[in-house]
Image (cartoon, rainbow, N blue to C red):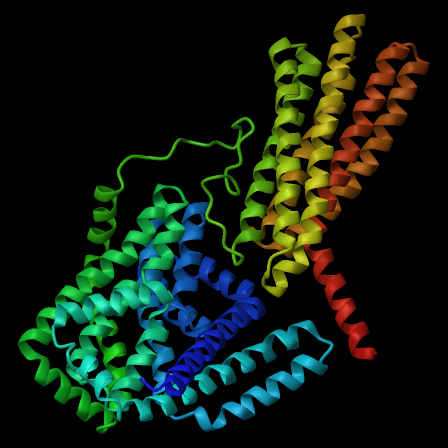
Length: 557
């Protein structure tokens, strides 16, 4: 092959791959958090999951990004296998949007997209607008690469050696293997199908063999999810296998159809596409996927069960009370920038549950003087400190990644949340210290003091629960924020009221000075726990308000 043509082909392919990556990454960074929220909320059943998978993948322009995110969700426990299967089925349809775009002759508009995007990226001061503009840059570079490859392919037709190699590819199974290997290396079926589209449109390959290569591309597209699943839990591996089995079974079905009725399929494609070879390839990719989903969707539960036969057994249980173990950001966790913050939030929820339970354990030990409870308070506090250290280190690493805009804004808030939870744990330890002091010095509390501490503890438990819901986004957050504010005010009032009462009891010789000091410290500590819980509830909301104020200031400038 002419060296100049080869370099032109390679340069065009490089531009195409880079444009695809820039466009996909920019879409994920600009809208990844919102798309992730849709993926979480609207996958309650298989059919809805499939529709979301179609739209999600079409928006991201990458089935790999969608399936990797789904694997991460399953690994984190945010989605079960049946929900994941529906999304993966839909993602297989959504990935055909790229080849549909490529089949339309948009290359002549590439410079316009590129220029507009570059100008905005260079001169805009708004980070979010710059993220959206980067999508235009990626779009422009992608079609510029396509134009470069098309020009090179026009010259390739005159090279008898290359034409001979392409013409020798007549074995359908070999074509499927080629499609699988090339796509597995590139890790994008959209890219491989787009190249096939150009080859067919340029008259370099026969459409019949192109259809078999497309089938191989679908199998090769499973590689990113498989690689991601290898590092995850058993359900993460099963999720990746759902993607693989769907495409293998779908390929077998389409292979049989093409072997026995290939000419009829090509005639149908010609009729649907108006004789445009590029449109025929794009439509074949879409029609094959839609047909496969329609045929296999009723058998989705059986495919899920098949993954259980392949990946047997269960993961070792990691409960929220497990010592010195990370459940959502640990060794068996699949890292994905799109779900990194979600995983950190889940781990912080677990840490908060431990701290909340430890406060109650410590308060119980204060009254009962149970030695096992006292020792367990100290053990759990060590675990909380471990989690705090590990989560903070994780957030530092995550903050250096290329995260979606909305997620990046939350990183600072999560640092504060980790600190507030750790301080709640410290207060539990302080109560355990008070229990030891009470036992050593034989200090006793009056019935009224015990009742007051129990009443305040109940209010603190409520505010922690509401704060946890606000932080995690569970239920009506606005309503629970109001409850947190109301409870925080009530706790402040009760703390002052109980402090006054205990001073009165001391004045009336109803309790000793030592008991009064312990009581005062406990009540003050519980009030501060309420303050920390309030901080947790408002952490994400405050970060959003801060971001809005920064944007408004930038607009004023």
